[in-house]
Image (cartoon, rainbow, N blue to C red; front, side, top):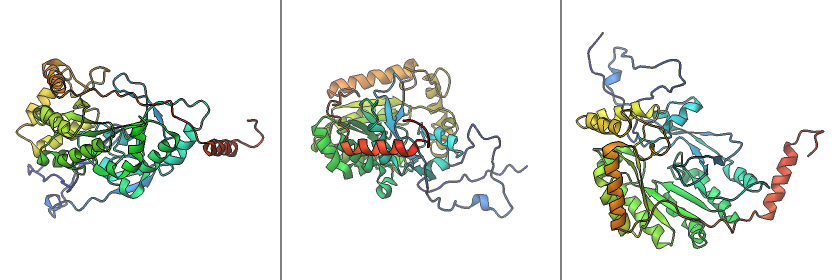
Length: 371
């Protein structure tokens, strides 16, 4: 057995440096030296593959006391932004893919999302409440430029005067201000930009295909100028790596006209733990041990805790100090919290949607059955 150190696979524009097997895989994979030195060569370009997702429904209902909404829509599975810390990575394992590089490069799109949304909103038993767009993967990730599923969904919501919230790391949301701004005037929308750090070099490694931090601040300014209620989400807060910028980020957002703020402590469920530690060893080897030590101190001596009330903010001395810092800076800049009451009274299903939904039910009814 050779003791030679093998050069890790580094793909330009990607955060993960492995396709770690998922918790459902019964086998493991490892790099093998074939004698030609191929393991020491630079990795070839990793192209993004987009596949169709044959979804039968588009609204996902959830029940969690940690978040201010009970339903979401995710137009895409997987996310090309490639944030190494993304809590959605483990969901790719359900598709038979790796939460590592596959999550960033093998994506699925719900091509019929807008049609499904019309059908679901037209159901007689539907009750209006704000829908959160892109809570699992970013609704404005790079492939949205081509497929425009998020814009189609917002067009449906605008037509029905249905309220929604959205969190993104992309400046692409500015493209849809023609739809969003009129909805904002009716109290139907709230937009949040996530900013993890203001350090360009750290951001490029953490979130390789997301917009640069200063570009996100520009987007916040343009949203605020257009009269759209917007907020800054400092997430995730990574101890000993990004936490020192908490106050700077909120102050920078305030200067752009933002008056709402929130934060989330780093979450490392399931396969993300291994991926994140690999990333730390690759880019911040001298800080890796300290970062993980503070995470465990804030997670009951574990890499992650899933209990409601703790999973978003952590526990222990470091987490408590972080919460105090956040409260103090929000008081300093008169920032409000995450919850914003949106207008549900205007919701109305267009008549032609109801006819289409009725026709779809008839079409799906087996011959000979009563309906």
